[in-house]
Image (tube, rainbow, N blue to C red):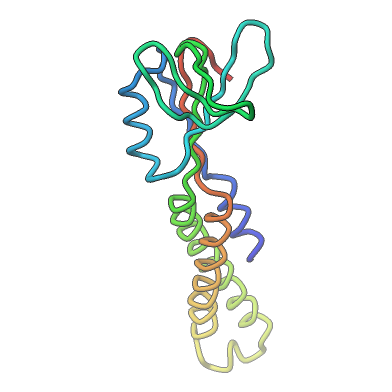
Length: 165
């Protein structure tokens, strides 16, 4: 159940948005507003060189500054093919929601299995075990899902120009 919750949390925390144009300062402002303080990582593709990645520092009307190991370097905005934003808070919320649901279902299933194996049908307690299992599973799933989601984070990729993955 715990592994199911963690796997669900990690699997669904990504989105992509295709802008279909060259990166602009307005795009940067929009991405930073949605990033809530998270870094923006640019993917630079120029000519036949391998793609390079680095934190996006600033977008001007014609060029962008990207921090590479050698320092901040300007690149034409057309060379910025993608920007990746990783938001750990959003990942935690998504993971908590998925963990809550997965944990409640798993706990209820364990409660029903426990009742089915009892000859007296849960000793006359009716649905107590399935309900208790659902509540306990939901609590565990909530915590595990939030932690897994926070560690993984929600990744949003913004694609620019005609470039598509």
